[in-house]
Image 1 (tube, rainbow, N blue to C red):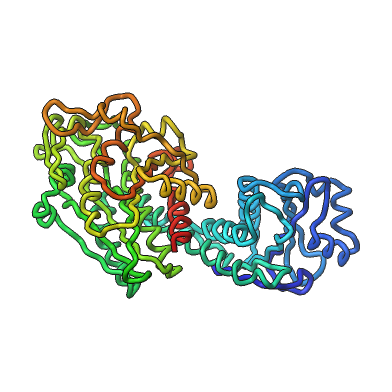
Image 2 (cartoon, rainbow, N blue to C red; image 1 turned 45 degrees about the vertical axis):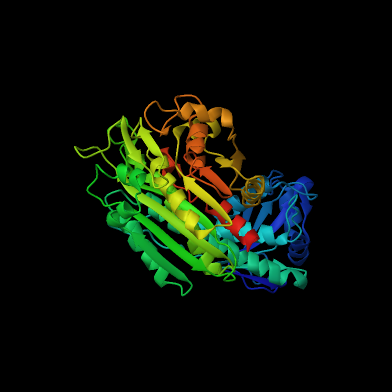
Length: 492
């Protein structure tokens, strides 16, 4: 969807649907007052008749009473003094749903009087563009009949102050780029495991690399990984006929001397649990075990669209975890790229086994910071549910930056402990480290395991609860592309 910023007049601007705010106690915005004055006080009459409800996110769609808009949507934004970010997004979501149910082909928004606590006009505009662009997402690739495309194609974010035009236009482009990256992440997550294999992810990476001159791809197969002694990563794919892949994409958008930021994604394209077989119920959702990989690739797509002046390396550790006569068994000991030996006590704790070798590998880039993203533990779902991503870090500044990015993008994370007291749970009688630490603090001990393989500023995002939804709304969410992109924009 194409969004533009413009200084215009509600009564003269042509539009398929004009969005006009109203506030608590039936207070009108300047746009609503102008419309009321030009329409023989229609808005005031509708308020008096009770047609305009005095409740947050209530809407009323009108055939245009005057001016050049085909429709006018009155939307309630709460107290005129201001509302919080969550409520603002709630109202925008209701607006999007209402406009989408109409036949409007374009939309024009007059929201400059809406005050959101702690956020400026650019942030408001970005949320609008993201919401409208995201509303177009449908996963229909695997259906015999394609869904009918929405007629809504264009949007105008109207301003009174022309000085805001540049920053708001930039924010609108960021919102659209974010939605584009989220769409890629959702597509990859929603594809079934018989389509989205490790090799498929490699092909998608090469496709991205061909799309931009500053992006290069390097793919390592199992032969090259054996030469690098990535015994931990390779152990996960032993039971599968699908070849494991280590995918590296380098984007050189910043200064040659600038250290890159590295994003590492867990790409288990299907996770049966291996010999430690999962229960059958809900196992179909284990196609989502590569949503960490999907999210870092989606973030890269957004970065490419915005052409951010930053150096970025994206690494995907891709494998399929299957049971067979060749599969790694509980009790087996493998040697990681770092030289540390690992007792595989549970083959369903495989994400950390692919990530630890990837984290060792990326040290060669001398990174400014490394963020790994993984659907790592069911324990994180128990701890935080589906609302917040679990955040672990060995660096206070990096943790603060990611938490701030989560708040600003409303793709929130919650800081979890990474204390030395938990490390002893990973002790092994037979190897340097065990791959699980018992029932207690499962998400914490998983992060502690990964921390043994890093010697640079590092953060781990456990997205097991946020990467997809179950039930009637089943599907990949595209998180945490919003958090990651906000962080990278601020770094750039």
